[in-house]
Image (cartoon, helix red, strand yellow):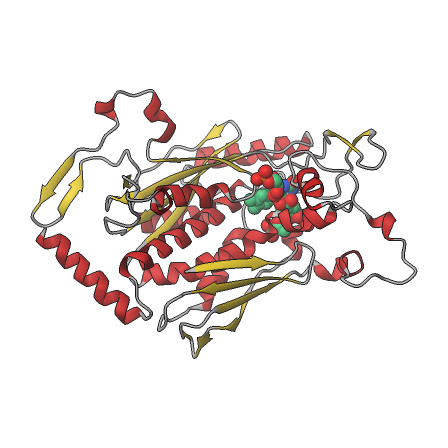
Length: 387
Ligand SMILES: Cc1cc2nc3c(=O)[nH]c(=O)nc-3n(C[C@H](O)[C@H](O)[C@H](O)COP(=O)(O)O)c2cc1C
Ligand SMILES: C=C(O[C@@H]1CC(C(=O)O)=C[C@@H](OP(=O)(O)O)[C@H]1O)C(=O)O
């Protein structure tokens, strides 16, 4: 199973094509649109989110509410396109002075300069339009499809914000369904009300100073059987693939599983998870410090992944850069930008991880239809039980 996305942030639409999605899966479009709506919420975002109201339309691969096994085509329109039709026009507009509309001032922390050099583009808009995190809209829609496959097998995905700037949220141990409900009610996607208020204040303060904030988000996946991914080849290790998916989100700079970087400070006896057995549960781990992975394979314990997002690159208190034409220094003018997109990014992270887990699930239990996958899955569960 694979997917590709296309589309620019101020272009007419984002397009996604999923190939290899099995047949006979009932698709609830409200679920896909719910994921898109969740991504748009979250304290700290700029004016663009008031313009967009993301909904996905299906343009292939689903009939009468069920997948057919054909490639699935998804489309999300950009409402903002109507304000950008002249700037973004594909055809040159006669009599217009294109040079005036060029972006010739690369923004620090963005893809602008590297992309301009690499693709030999002197209008940096040709880079920024695609490097924008607007593209994650389609990745979330695709993740919304993957979640429906996972749901068929009782696999649940949740996320929460752990840190924004210097404010850390206390992690309340609660069942995953409750975690999903509680974080959904929070503008910064936390369960800790005290931290919520301090995070909102920190975002407001950064905004007042013309500055931005990053943070840490966590994703938890429950109900995953042991044995997804594989130790036998580097690119089949599922933790590695999830790490790649997380780092592919714009502005994500780090990833860890379970106790993560803390493992460097601890002794082995306080890192590794002891193996237990119970006639009802089968094999399990006494703890889950590994975050659900050993040898690139799932252990059957919940997958726990955290990602680090850097502060938003564009600051109202603009940073210095160099004009690509004159090579002179300037400080950038900012029209609009987010102050903090960490809560939104936690939704993106959930969905890109859901995709990777669904892909690994299909590799393990293969099959073209839901029924075939179910047979393979149930046979494997029986095999594990007898082991
Ligand atoms: C949900 C989300 C929203 C973002 N919004 C902005 C924004 O409004 N302004 C900005 O400068 N960067 C924003 N970014 C970050 C940039 O897209 C990102 O830093 C840039 O493309 C360069 O990529 P890199 O940081 O991964 O190197 C956002 C990222 C995410 C995930
Ligand atoms: C459009 C989205 O996020 C955008 C991501 C983004 C960036 O540089 O990554 C910059 C901003 O776009 P604009 O310059 O149009 O205001 C954000 O609003 C979105 O999340 O849907």
